[in-house]
Amino acid sequence: MNVNKKKFIALAGLLLLLILIGFWLYPRETENEYIVETGYIFDQSHNISLDDVQKARKALPHISDHQPGGNGTGDAAKTKTPEASTGIDIRKIFAEGLINSYTTIKFFKHLETSFKDSANLGEHLDQVRQYLFSQFSESEAQQLFETYQKYIECEMALADEFRSFGLVRTPEDAVAVLKRIQEFRRQHMGEELADQLFGADVKAQEYAFRRAAIVGDKNMYGPEKQALLIKLNADMWGPEADAVEAYPNEYIRYQEKLKIFDKDLSEISSEEGRRKKIREFRTEFFTPEVVQRLDEVDVQIARETRQEELYREQEKALLENTALTEEQRTARVQRLQNEMFGEEAEAFRRSETMRIEREKMMKEYEGKGLQPR
Image 1 (cartoon, rainbow, N blue to C red):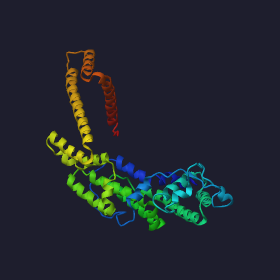
Image 2: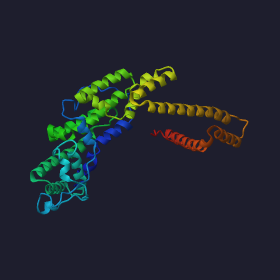
Image 3: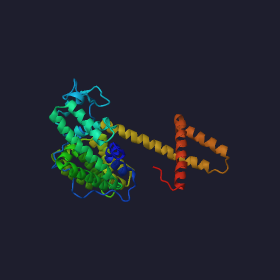
Image 4: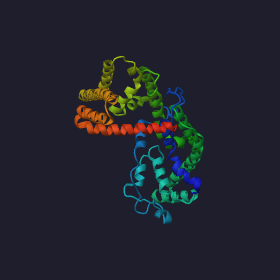
């Protein structure tokens, strides 16, 4: 491929990754707000199920060339991917059909990397064509090749188009970019094929961004967020709404619950009241034994936090004591650490050294007008 064409291999695979990087790393100018526009890319009316999304997230099995000789003849039958590995018969991974959201794209990306050293696009497509005809029946190979050609030409064009998309700073931006990407594919490949190939992955991304926008909104209370999440699940998943809500494991759902009720928890006046509310959340997701262990961890953390607070108070007094020499201050601080942290004193000192070094580094960055992450 020429220079511009070779860029496709790197750029096309990074499109959604760039959305994620921009969303998480670039600073927000405003707090997250719920995406109120209802123009879903994929709502419940599209035939994309939770099972489709789960399949799309699974890695493609190791591919082995069909033996012996494939279905083609001559040079085509001899064409193999460079890494020719042992594994599942290549045709078995297409048992549920040649064109779908959970096998075809991963196989196409396998072809991209397998024949990435082609001199140009024409040679690349010729090598892919020969390989497909060596592994599939003529009708299957022709269907896959025609689809692959549409796919790779579209993704190459999309890689150029993506440069004009701008930075992704909010969930709204992320959904807007996803929509532009899928609309671009629909225009270049046809809506049916674009949705068949990319629907499961794009729907999963869209749902994740929309849900994150609700959960992360710092201006809404928990019950408001929960109502919006119920609506989001119904809008996007229909009869599978409950299954989607229950899909993550208990710990992830518990952590999300804390974020949903972050504003509510922050406004509880007493620490005891806040702990009581958190314990209520834990009982929703965990067994009594797990809840008890989590409570014990809380007690331990509180004890350690209080211990460090007491240490800081006494350390401050020593450091501000002008009657002591520098050597005396250092010796007394070390003795205080030994008394308060016992066997963990050395570990505490190592932690202190790292903390001090980090603070120095941050001051250096701030002095140069930089913002370390």
